[in-house]
Image (cartoon, rainbow, N blue to C red; front, side, top):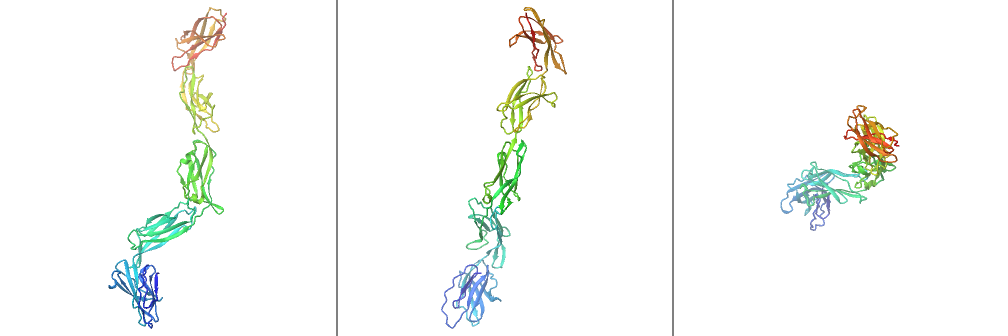
Length: 545
């Protein structure tokens, strides 16, 4: 209630709305005349009703108010109101139903039982406009902490109509929420309701925070010279507490490409207890884990990342550095050390068997992490007749880059072949691809150089048989195959070509040659096809005298 009191002779003070006019000077009165003394105001928040308190040396019997346009002070009143006295002794007008929402001049005259009254009425400027009223306003929380980081202001903005004495929604008016001079605003909806939220950034603001909620008219529904007003203003304290991230157990060693789940709980300390923190932005840390999207902790503070570690390392999580939670519980992180046993892949390229029954073993040992296998790692060579049961023929070793390139003799040049790495503490075992290679095996049997001993210059005859392995048995080579004869003198290291012969239909051959010195004789059948391997005989020593 806004009021103004006057005790001047024959004067009356009038108040309505929020602005009071100054009282005019009054002429002097006779000493034996006692005029009424009045206080005039409006009903609280209601410029449509005048309220007058009147007293005098005799009972006040009447109070009258006249409402005029300011631009026509001498004109007829737009409304004359006779006030009535209530049980509480206050004089009240009925509701002033005026044609327009605007400023008016009001003059009030009081009369007592002796007939005394104001010789010049008191005046008042009446702001007869719709008034904003805030209803159901709330501002939460009462303090900011890790669990209460969002400031929320809600309520309804209404318009009080002095003509009808009723309220209606203030639709489309702007309400602002300002936190430490940084603000955001929204317009009221069809019911006049507003809701604004703000999650303040506290890195450089330890608190408390000054929070203000205010309104400003944008919809022309509030006809006023200064269409703004404050709704609420508080200083919110900021409460900090220790924090931590607790990780669940994870395996210390995994075999690639196994997946690992890093999970845990974001907590803050409250008294002697640790409580979960909701809404924390958790980021992965370490190789592929850092590539995953950040997660927000659930109501029980939980988070979970599932990923595939590719190499040994530290894998963990942290509270995002730009999270508003850092100001409440500090920077938090946790990690686990994980050893990854690499998956291996044996690459074998150019797999073939040449005419000397030599298997080409060329390739490299690849690891899932890209690190090189240790130099000298053994790569085993295996053979099978059915690709199920394998026999190890031997092994080759890798160089510093994991590569190998060797030709190795195989007794049976036909079948299934593969390479096998048996693994280590940091590398998994693994085979190469299986290849099927096929050359027909051949041999020279029964080689004999005679007679012996033999005299120098005499004719020596070298005989034997050339065979091939087909259909599960050794069979004679076709007639006419060329068999070449070689000699290595006693004490020499190399052979010398001495001639050739041809096979008969039974695969046998007989090659005459002149004996000149002691030494070793050998016969070789050279294949002219990729379907066979060369056949060479055992050596036969002849003593020449």
